[in-house]
Amino acid sequence: MSVVILKLSNVESAYGPIKAVKGVSLQVRQGEIATVLGANGAGKSTILKTISGILDPRKGAIEFKGENITAMDPALIVQRGLSHVPEGREVFPLLSVRDNLAMGAYTRRDPDGVARDLALVYGYFPILKERALQPAGLLSGGQ
View 1 (cartoon, rainbow, N blue to C red):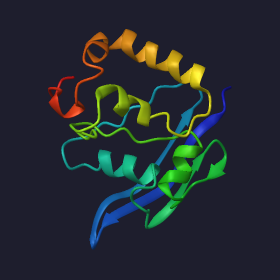
View 2: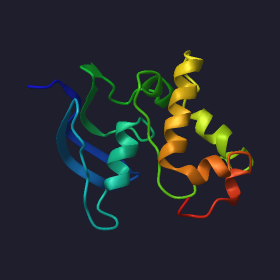
View 3: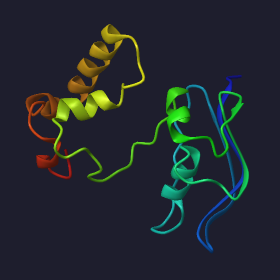
């Protein structure tokens, strides 16, 4: 049986007086792919923002690799290897595509590994390699 990497226990989050998620519990084991499904406004993004520390939970607990990260500073959560990659056009528009991708590795200290991972990303998304030097703000929504 594989190790639980991420665990939410009875998590509740709100925006001011409005409860966005209530009583969310889930576990993700090493090697699993997990999906959060729901209609618009159901709280999917709120759950992800709460996990990544962007939004503090009002109640409940979040563990990552056995460590309690509930309400931890997002920068510290990223240093532990967990990050939030929002959908949409949330890029640094004036930075190049390559520099935006490099931002995802800013806490890493293994330049050879970062270069290998960048090559892997370019293999998955060849259009990003073609546009590596252009400002990321010029990419289309699908890119």
